[in-house]
Image (cartoon, rainbow, N blue to C red; front, top):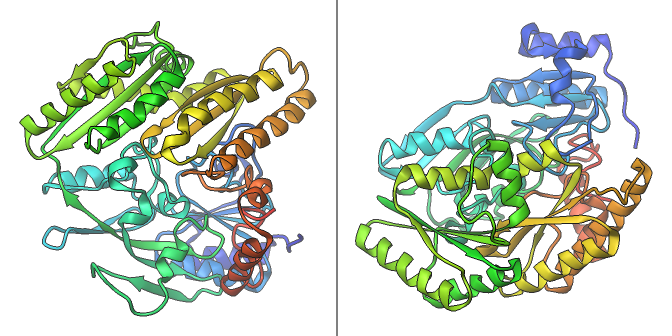
Length: 467
């Protein structure tokens, strides 16, 4: 795949379109836009454009198409699979300036936002008027809503409230030729033609660039409590997942973490975590409108977990203690990146199969001489299996060869259990060669044809999703 380079004439026209201060060509200015959170993966764009409006985006895409130059749209750069890395150079179209909450419609329970709004910023603004934006990725304090939409992010509370797609009711997006499309709206039901905005969700910037979103809000739960249960093994913790649901209670979050993942998180935050000697932990959150009901539900869940082998149960009803527990959980991925060389595999399986997946992931590590650190959203079957480099991979070449083989084995294990290759991080660059393991040739060809309809010149985020 080859594209035309960015020349001085195109840079000049981009400056005229969006303003010279928002067009970056200096190498030092461009460096932060050369990578996302994927370890050891970067590519320098030829120019960065920091758009501030739908009109800016439209103008940039028209100019790029006329010049035959690729465009990689970018939010906060918190992705894990390289979707925001401009592997073919060209233009990085940053949406970080595009960060206004346009409206919080309390009567209809919707928010209208620009793509550069930080997820937690919307959550806080909604809470001020008694509403709740439920999607809750671990990086909520830095990730952008536009990026959440483009990867169909999930997060901690997907087990009860669903993923980002379940909360997106309308989008404004720009096609590669600059045309602006509005799809969906504030209607709770709408059967008028193809559901175009749902097609954009999860497309990782390969079909269009999102510039506005209409997001569903919920009544804010008045009460929230957490239960922490240590287990003797990760397999036993995974078995406890079904025990929680057999109580008839749907928790707002249900996470499992092996001992090593907790050690990494605690090391990064320089804090202790309860029951550090346990081989695994389960973190269960229950929320609701009635404090007594929340307390009864957690008590019932605690009894069920002790029955299936939990070593103990710790209740955290104080907000400060809850935040301390969540803090360690949220930074595990950052800690792994800080202290190790690793690859995260975003596996997902039917919930009842997560115990088997935990076992098979450990077997993959033993087979290839890698350390395996696992944690994730067990309540919806989404386990983050992390493959860590060890002394057995003495050279970078040995590491790469071993990593690719182990990564594929983990993916195959998930698929053999009825699962998929990504639960919430998307495909991007690092998972594209596994797409054929999940989808038939016919399905992939259909996806390619949809890509051609939206982007016939292949200029939007090229090199991503498809092998």
